[in-house]
Length: 172
Image (tube, rainbow, N blue to C red; front, top):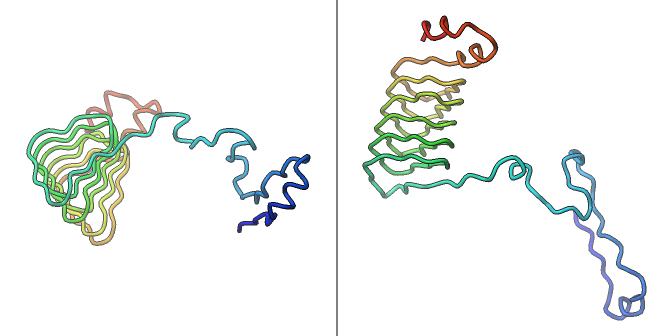
């Protein structure tokens, strides 16, 4: 809802000795997350870490090589090679990746032929295909997704919470 201050130029000139009142602002439910009046508007994510950029391999491209970096990668075309990023990897529907993956978060709506190792989170979306092994903190599989391979998930939390590192390594 917006409220406008319909002042004509004549009225504003006549009252030029008084400052304009601050604009009406409706208080949202998460008012404690809002910056104070007059404070610069800063996104919460930018306070803790800089926003990572996303690189795109478009749907009409076929690339062979290796991807390494700190940002996010979105593949809509075909890529043959290993992907090692500190950010997120997203395979769009219709995309195909042949190679191993190391990323913080992996979202698969296309096809991945290769292993996913060391991800915090893996999402296999409807229509997504994964042929390979997965080692991740969490795994989400949507109805209609397909996978062939071994899966290890949830073990990372036990290792961090004080479990015996030797027994965790032997179990993997």
